[in-house]
Image (cartoon, rainbow, N blue to C red; front, side, top):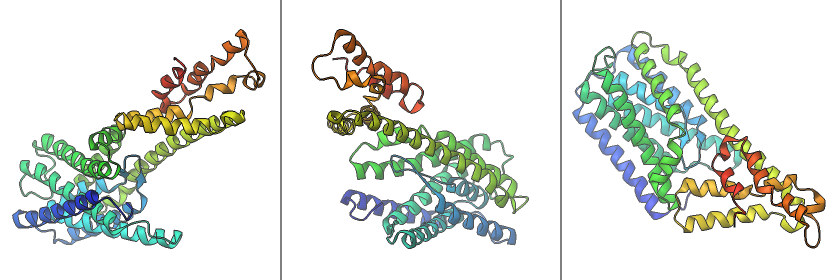
Length: 355
């Protein structure tokens, strides 16, 4: 997040940080489980802390203000292995350290700071709150037992319920701050972004569970689990890049079509901007606004199949030429039908000359 944030966003970040501090103090006061002082426990804490710092360096930035990184798996494993107080302090502080290091790296590379202190404070605080909520759910079933006894029948309920609670808490904290910053409904942001990332997050929680289960017998396991974590990260990164590259390529092709006719040069860009403004003024859901913008940006793509002598003809078109021109929405639909990203938008393209 940048400097100059709206007052409501600044107050919200302060509130999240205050809740994180209160939750940490409450867990430290109420927790009756053992402290992680054994040599193997200390080694595991150091390993998970180092992995948290590294994870912060490789976050993927998604639409809606969400980031995807591997800290989800780490904080779930730390929660199961050491209980809420140790996990909150470990992951929260190490993630803040990792983001600070990332900010310094970006500043050295780009001559300006890319991570404000509010950004670091919010991200570390929301991880602390997420861990606190997960611990509240999980240890309601298995009070003060660490490492958590994974073979207990209560885990049939405790593990998935804790994961769901952490997922909902984490994503809603981010959706609210994004909604305040953009002036849109947090629910719209949450629904639009999270439904695409549920499987990825489920995989990270599962990875955290497996790490906690096996690390009880072998403290080197977290280092071995770096490989599947890297695979999840890289597959998600490729998925995000593929979507961005596909949309970029289709829009570039639409720009080429616009340039064929000087009269319509940058026409699609203007239409996309107007359509987006109108959709927002109509208070349409954020996901619909984005689908409308994507469709408007490439709505004349089908003109790629219109011959130059028809497209550039001065004067009235013949009936046959009109038939060719009127076919361009259907041709645009056929082109976009090959791309899943335009599953909804292609219908708008086909009907943009309906009236």
